[in-house]
Structure formats: structure tokens, C-alpha cells
Length: 316
Ligand code: DHB
Image 1 (tube, protein in one colour):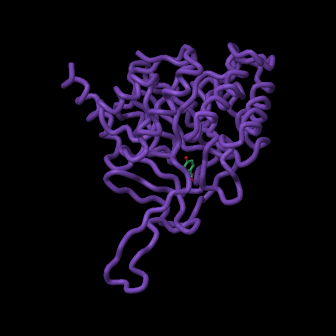
Image 2 (cartoon, rainbow, N blue to C red):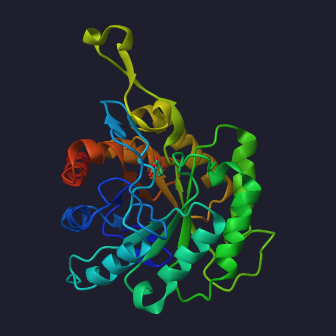
């Protein structure tokens, strides 16, 4: 069974942050599904309504979203972890809280809330999302290597080692130099890198590769609408949004393989276009030990996890 930082997962399939994990009902669906864990919607300090609708569009080979960090706020997702502690041991699965403050200070405050003793015991891991593409005026932190170093330093310097272990969710990188650069930054926080910053806590426990490909655009075609025949599939931000689904799988695979080559000791969670057990096998071959399901989960609902397990048993 896969493990990260001594947390054992009953199987390798999780939901991707943002997918079927915003409300209590959705999170309960994940708990009762055959997923190997539960990842929350990326949370901010205060609840957010997010962007105008429609903000998610699904097709066979892709999704595009500009949700705008709609979420119920950190206290809700922290308290949900405490509620999950009542789940019987036989069906209890790891709970990961995804964090996406809109600036460094907010990230640190959210992580500190999750480290409070009343909450920490219900939370297995924290996934710091450095790659939300959809908040106007806020660049993706993961594309700024020094900003990434700064936020990780702040998060780890404030760690007394008693809170949940923390990993990062990275954007896709498209250049060899970027693979090297992000690996160099992360290595400073894994405890095994040359630069070690002297944090007191666990250090970086994992990385999830990749988040959606930011700022894509999809048109829908309406023959009855004359001059307006082409409309963007989603409304916010002039139709720009994060693209997921099988069209991004080649980039997810290369990012996992590149980071695995640079940091072979860092556990990796693969994400990006995983819709079958054989997709997951490809990610495992590239170096991922756990898998996050995004677009396929939004298309099929939580039954996708049962299907993935069936596909694995057919293979055996
Ligand atoms: C959001 C969308 C994403 O694709 C992502 O990776 C993170 C956050 C959002 O708009 O909420």
C-alpha cells in the first residue's frame, strides 16, 4: 500500500483538489467511495463564492475551469477532518487539506490554523497549492522560483514538527531548465538537499505533479447564434481557465519523470489526465506512487474509483 510520511493509503487513487470536494456532501461521497483518500478543495482563510458561472466545462478529452477558489474557508475543512475521526478504523482513509492562500502571509496563517492541536489530529497531510491559475491579478506562485522558495521558507520556519506533514502541488513546467530549478528549490526543504534551511519540522513530504495547464481557452459553437456563433465555454476571465483531462497527460508524465529523476527520494503524486488503470500505470512508471483523478471524476462521479479498481483486477 502506498505511503507518504508514514501515512498509509488503502489504494493509490485520490481525487484531485477541486474535484468533488468543496461541500460536506461531496466530501462524504469521497469518504464512502472506493477512493484511497480524500483531498479537500483548496481553501483560503475566509469562505469565497468564486467566479461567475458557467465556470466549469467538460468534454471527452478535456476540462476547463475557472472556479476562482470557491471554498468554505479553512475552518470548515479543518473541522471536517475532526468529524472524520468518528469514521470506523476499517473504512477510515487519509484526509489531505489543500491550501491556496492568495498571498504568502495567508498561506502561513492557513497552515498555522491546520497545525492547531484541535485540528491537526484529524488531518493527515497538507497540500500547498502553488498553482492556482484563476485568481485575477495573482500569478501562479510555482512559476516564480524565488517566491516559491520564500513561501516554503515561511511555512517550514513556522513548523514545530507537531502539525501534519506538508507537500506542494506544482504547475506544469515546460522547459528542462525549469525542471532543474524547481527541483533545486524543493531540495532545500526535503532535508536531503544541499541548501538546507534549518527548519524544525518534517520538511517537504511530497509533490503533486501537475495542476491544470493554466490559461487555456475552449470555444463552443452555436450555429443558431449568428455573429456570436463562437462563445467561450466558461464565462469568467474572458474564457481563460485551467485545462485538465487526457489532453494534458503527456505533460503530467514528463513533469513526474523529470522531478523523479532530480529528487528520487521525494514521494510524488501523479495528476493530469488519469482516467484508466493503464494511465495510472504510466504515471507509476514515471515515478508517482499515488494518483489524483480530476476530470474523469467530474465526468463520472465517485463511481470512477470503483471502475479503476475493476480495471486493475481485470489486468491481474
Ligand atoms: C482553481 C482552479 C484550478 O485549476 C486550480 O488548479 C486551482 C484552483 C480555482 O479556480 O479554484
